[in-house]
Amino acid sequence: MNIVNDTRSTLEKHLPLLLGLLVALLAGKALKKMLWTGFGMYWALRASGVHF
Image (cartoon, rainbow, N blue to C red; front, side, top):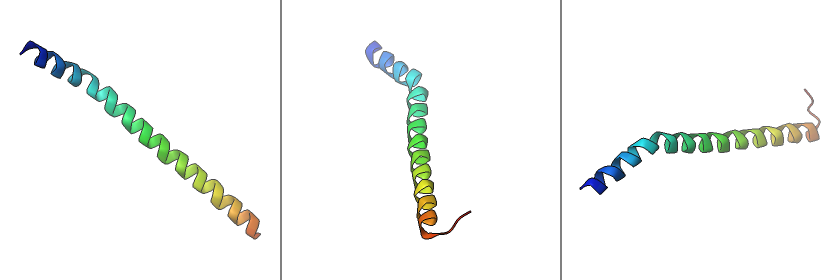
């Protein structure tokens, strides 16, 4: 019974950290994808002769 309670408290203790890392990882991937998409669109417009 004590082992189950210890495991549960350890999980509850580290769950916010794990969720924060997961959110940071997903946000980083989304940001990376947005930057590469913007870069590609910029070069496509530049190659087509449209300049800003």
